[in-house]
Image: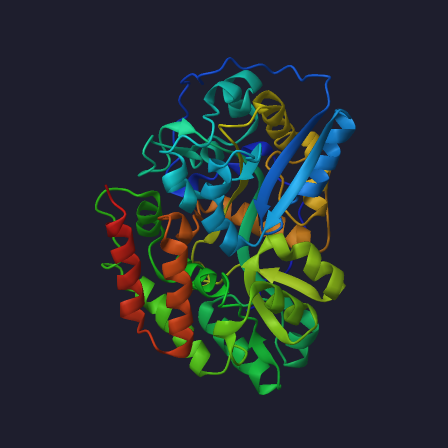
Amino acid sequence: MKRPLVTLAVVSVAALALTGCGTGGTVNTSSSSDPISTDITDEEVVLKVAYASDPPITPLTEGFTKLHPNVTFDLVQTPFADYQTSLKLSLSGDDTPDIVQYSPGPMRSIVPAGLVEKLDEYAEAYGWADTVSPSLLGMLTSNEDATQYGTGDLYAVPGAIQMIGVFYNKSLTEAAGVDGAPETLAEFENDLDAVKGSGVTPIAMPALGIGGFQLWGALSNVLADPAVFNEWVYGNDGATLLEDPGFVDAAATITEWSNAGYFPNGAAAVADADAIASFSAGDQAYFVTGNWNTQLFQEALGDDLGFFLMPGETEDAPAVATGSGFPYSISAKSQNKDVAAAFLDYVVSQEAAGGIYESGFIPVTPDGAITSDDVRGQLQSDYETVVADDGIAPFANWATSSMIDVLTSGAQGLISADVTPEAFVESLQADWESNRP
């Protein structure tokens, strides 16, 4: 039985508690070395913002400048994979950004180096704990050596909710005889086979970028124990992926799908941008990716664009999805920390919610008047389901500063069948253990 697509108004702030993150975390009230202020200067200020992927940064910066015309922004975007490796370097130099998109992998070395500002005093001054889910803030805390997340000081503020699921082209799936979204993983595999039988490549796959390991994460969410995965990503002592066969099963599924011809030829060499363009052009029916691509897909496919969560093994399985806030941090070297913090406060305000929603993201503190009967409404509905099921899982590359490289090359090996599923999971655990103190 297919799940009906539903429309839902944006949920209340109370419903945004991400208790499925594995740990709610606690926010300390330790002091910054410099006194803080919530007053914004009337002098001209240019905030330099470094970010990756496509968070809804433009509507946020434009909205803030409308409120504070003396504050403008210099936006510097870097592809995600390059951003992971360049972030520490950019924060270490003389001309550092004022604000950076927070990425937990690199933060494993950036936080101990003191390159990003502790935000606890700003959080208290602005009352973020009253407007932002404690769990959303908690997952952006870290101890001082960044060996464990979900505890310690606050280093970032969530800008919007990001979540990974399955986008699909309704015209292609319907032409293959597929009716709506699948209820189970087995049903999804049947749908993939039907699409392939219709002459269409089923799944877009940018394994040169983040697509391969994000698919593994999505499959692990429904085949393995999310609690085990969360403990591993957050750096809990003794955490391991080797005792739950679901992680190997997820890796094996990727190889099986590759052998079945569900991915484009040469998927291991396909970049993220090329896969986005290919899916948007109607070359594949499905794309397992994040809602940061919603706006691009909507512009290309319009009402043909659909979305569903990766289905579990049974129809009544809890909804689980990789997700987080799109967080932003302040550089410890910034000369405009108070203005940067005021921008972060705007990011989590209801004033910013409309622009975030129009960009295809889910606002951290949404305006309840926002509604939509297109794919954005489906995203919101599915997100509410995940939250209700305590099903938000962290991104696998958060686990260590080097994990993204191990995940990327390993997923490429799964697709080419040069790496066994067991060896893939063992390589992840080995990298995790090599980064322990």
